Image 1 (cartoon, rainbow, N blue to C red):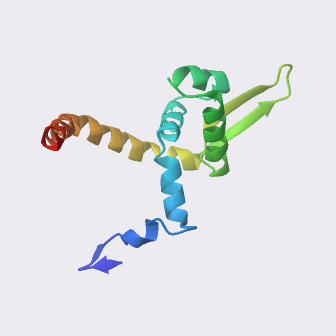
Image 2 (spheres, rainbow, N blue to C red; image 1 turned 60 degrees about the vertical axis):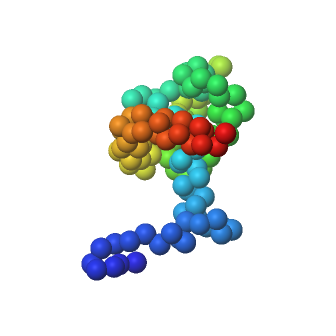
Length: 129
């Protein structure tokens, strides 16, 4: 949608309607585990256990599900090497790399505004008592 020559978001394009692709994609990439995996794979190719050690609090099952979903969405690539034992590595695809700037902007915004958010939470909690 365009208003006064400016592109505007149509909020309803990513609402909770069933089968909304935009919403499903946002849910995937905004997931805390997905953000961490994408960020870690920015710098290097990693194996499953390297990722698991690097991500505090993630279970083996949740990492497996997260990696599978990111692979399905074309954001990461899984490479299996025919060795004994088999070696599996993960790296960002070109599409996955396009998310890095967005993630970095989000982290910068969070860092810049964390004190304001902490203060707002404290004020809210005091008023709720």
